[in-house]
Image (cartoon, rainbow, N blue to C red; front, side, top):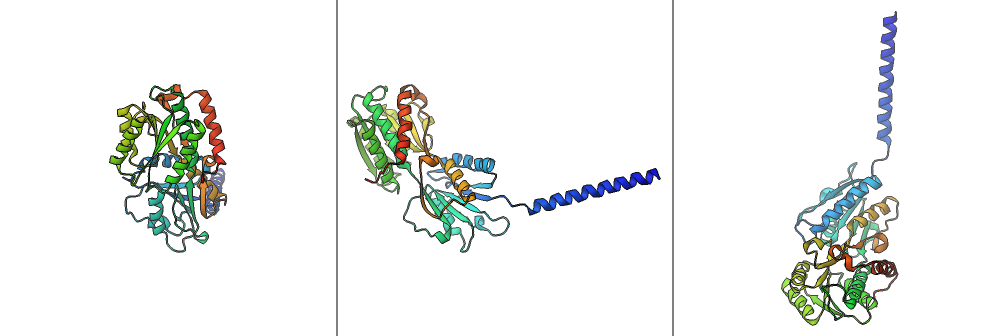
Length: 340
């Protein structure tokens, strides 16, 4: 009889275990599926592929901090992105595209009637958007960052305390007309120069195309010859040629896009870093909380879409006073009207 009871209790225990496991499985199957996000990085081999590293960090961050299921894709030129817009259980709730090229490819691949949200980060253009289409276009308010850069450049040039500055308070700006955000970069920088040192001057140079490195070299050499000791460059592949001139002529540059300080630590004062990681986080957070509105948005310092890279070799010339001033100016820039 004892042996029979033992068998009974074993069987009963097994049944209870199986039942609990089945209930747990059923419970899990009824739970809400994870919010699914696809992030399309910058085109491989394109001018902005260097930004994919910080973008991928942003993807990992939203997974860890927001608990979403996120995939990161680096597209090839001309690649069909239709696989990101499938329906069913594996459908993405949110697709984020970085830059104009990736966004336009995603927009072309998005089928009619797709129910998810599509967001373009660091996008500026005349493309009309429809609220019914669930499209959000986000421009980074880079004029805030260039304002701070202009302030620092003028302040440093006017004091002549850095070994690569001279007695003439003169800086320079260079950008390309095929950059749809050129006007924002210019307006912020010029306003910052005036605020940083009222007596400082600024030379503005404009390329027709961002890849015209020959003209960029000629402009940079001319700026140095006229006395400019710091050259700020809006984004573009011409940045590398200006950096070469800075190394040859012993002046300073400020570059844009990513942290370029490692390329020439003695001559890159700082870089205006476009913080795609923070923008990705803000887009996912807003979408999950129902705060992501379709249409055109502008995100700046408040959303963390830009920052200055470390000064590295120049740390000793960027003291506590100016660091504190730059923090104040960054906050001040949030409320500035740069259109005039």
